[in-house]
Image (cartoon, rainbow, N blue to C red):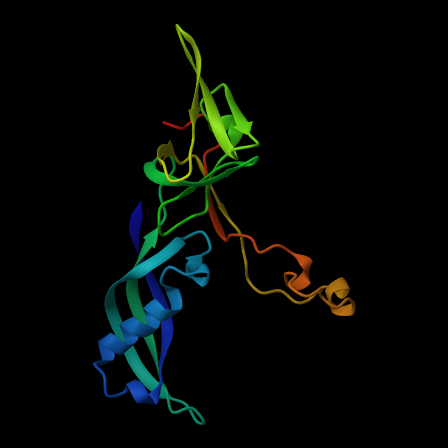
Length: 202
């Protein structure tokens, strides 16, 4: 579920942090940039959690017009990237027509689509929950998948979305955005999503 990934980055340390231990200042800047944020999802790599260690520091440079130091840093970072077919335990965040949305506490973009639930299953519009119609000798019993309940599932697919900034489209340039609307009229999508595509709910 968690892996240590080797990375290289140039870290800028502002002058007011020069009095601090150099490694501590580097670690703080790396975690501030990467740790457990929307921008901390690296394409094809996973969700960055925390710095593991620093393996190498190259020479630092101060450029004209900038009093900060710039250092090329080699480090290992702890990344959340479960392998396919790994079994995880999370909590039901909410249910919708799209399926059951699951949270691990630090990661919320897990979706179990209807076809991967125990069958037969139905969506209760009034309660906004999925219901497993469990068959017994005495007849069917409705088992509700309520918000906050623990759920065990197997990862069968992952989706990475490149969320790098792009230039405005012609329509977005010519048409002012409505108040409160997403920029460009597009819904903000998660850069990393885990999916259960088969009947892999346990």
